[in-house]
Length: 359
Image 1 (spheres, rainbow, N blue to C red):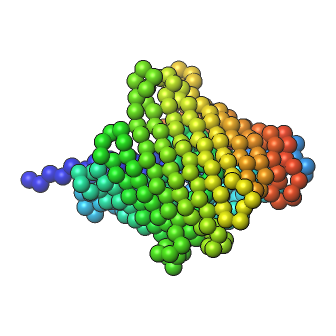
Image 2: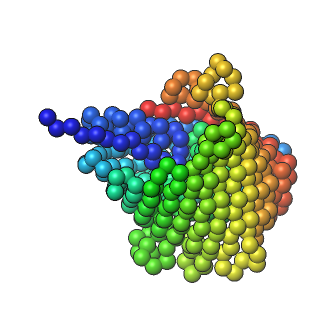
Image 3: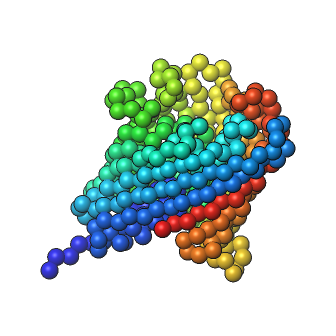
């Protein structure tokens, strides 16, 4: 009798999809192939804008396929459809108020695309993990346990990843992670800067990260990451850029986790270095009756050639069932430049409502 053992692996930076992939892998142990998905609908209202207050609706659907051809090899593909736009159609914020609406880029909606398609291999007793194909590098770099998931947590892009990570759109690339133990890990990734296979061997986006997992503060779990990257402007491949940053999340109590990000970077021909800083808290199960619920509060500040911006965001994510959740979101844009009109955004309030269905 033949026996095979499969190890569960977390892939996606987006928690809702990550949980679905974990469940799909368990199913794949018996079926070898699994299919799942996630659907989201988001409504946001802009209050106190210079134009008429307007309601913005956006929806997206992910359908993913998972196949395990060998014990240590997994193939993953994610098809995503997006319709509608976010409030930045009017606000033109520097940070971007709806990450989900701009997955394919600013102004790219009402399309179906292959978001990711890659092959994952585990080597050397699972110490080395290699992923190659059409990648989202934020699955592997600048991760954060509190602010890394626009489908269930913060909607603002500056609170999903460090703005100075300046990652290219999903495209052909390679990511390699080395994890010799439970505490220390390192990774390197390269990717086409403009989703073109013709540039992947020359003008590439490259990133390196070192991370440290530890137990501090009375054995509370914490993750500390440092990364550095070089790259090219996707619209002008002759423009070189660089950036460095940190990302950390630390449990403060059994249900409260703090996070912070900071970074500095520059693109060729810019007059000064750009800076970004964000910090906040996540509270798991604020009320005993709803153990899966969570709430988050954060602040972000950016300074660069395009101007400066300060914004705060809070959300409450409530699970109606194990597979259906609703979120109440509120963003407050304290000050910043409107990238569309060139005028100043000041004290804009953007309430929002998000529904997520996993299947």
